Image (cartoon, rainbow, N blue to C red):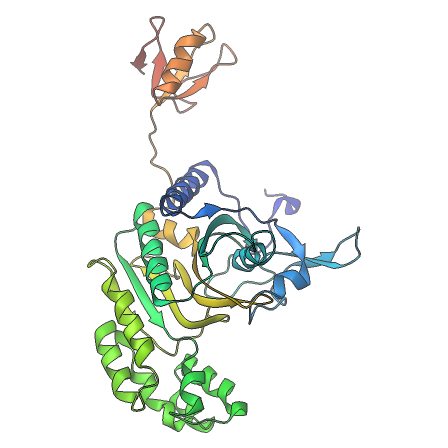
Length: 371
């Protein structure tokens, strides 16, 4: 019977050895790709002052953060819920004098006070890359390609990228499709939920065609071009086509220009990464501005758990492992490890090599003998 004291809170779980190994392998492969593209890794702290975490990006609130009082300063601390905002702080403070564009990457756990119904996990491993100093088409093109390359390195083969334009309503509302400022948030909300009736009720009847400018990229882009009678979206559409043209041919491309979920602080461009077999998005990214410094940036975040749904979630059952008897030759064992073997050393006469998961035994001659 399970002791009630041993239960974990809802949304939290242990990663046992095989799953932990799969997580580590995927993380290493992704970080290696980022490093190969010139992104230097940073490691922000798990805990910061609440206002610091909430003050670097538009739309980042503290209501989903785990908060508590710092016994030293008596100020409110919070567990980070998004590492992107911390990278923004690093770029604006400790690395403000570094040459731009500044390329940084990261990997670490984040925590949520309460998860959503689509993804009940309250602790997630977040990996990402940020290109600080530019939100240009070229920066977006590099970022999307890097995200796809990172997923491919982790073993994902059926990847799709869904583009969006987070500031679409603001752009159209100024002149092309005039809309009072007090109605814009309601219109954005109804477009995001794809509610035609609600959109009309919110005063956004002119925005109804946007609900249907979605789907495969080229088809949706043509529909959006037809809606854009005044040409205010011409540069954005040209940018999307430029980004799309640079992606590998085996990547599926879609466009949902009014999607706002997960794009609380992005500016002109956003994208979501998907793969067949994953219930939730593998990651999101786009362009944004760092509050305080108002510096433009482009980046993305990836999440390991949905990747493991596609990849199988665990290491293979059988890993070649060498059993080292009590009287084994230590130099020979070190040589075998250098050659790539995983070893398990006996610490008692009764140690059973097979039960310990070993596939081979180190012989007296210093070779691996199958069990």
